[in-house]
Length: 245
Image (cartoon, rainbow, N blue to C red):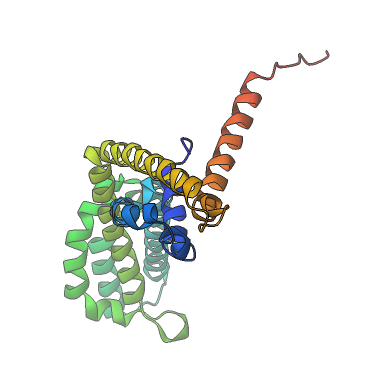
């Protein structure tokens, strides 16, 4: 089981305390280790998702930034269209100018860093309330108004800020703690498996395949990762054949 990652452990523990729970508590060893294993499961479940098989934070931040930039670009181009309209009513032009100045004066503003975008969200959130009437004045398709795009723009930036905070938390000790939790969990599983094997050997009333019933998914996931690592190593070690001129 030494190849088991935290992501694999999370999946296997969910299975162990779900459909395999009856097998877990069938033996004396299982009853003894059940609360210990549950504590390990809970420790793993509380780790950041990026460490246990959730979407990597970098990917989540990039997706939030795509949404932010999409709304920002849409707002800028719509205000640009109104600004170029030769017969735009004066009150509409004034509203458009206020919206553009408040949220995205230049299209290049979308090239700002994640931190800058998250920081700007604080002020932009206040401006939504202040400019609500202006935003509702500008119509979109299906009965919507520019207020909806502004909300999407600011909400995405706020999400970037929240994700940056999560990444900082993960990088300031969570990874180190996760490594310790994984090592301790594998040690507990090893001791439990040894105790279960000893009990099966002296108790004929227990199913002969009880070890497989309890540890089946742990073994399967561990073997899958071992095979994947072996495949990567084989690919890295494979000699490169020179191309024929």
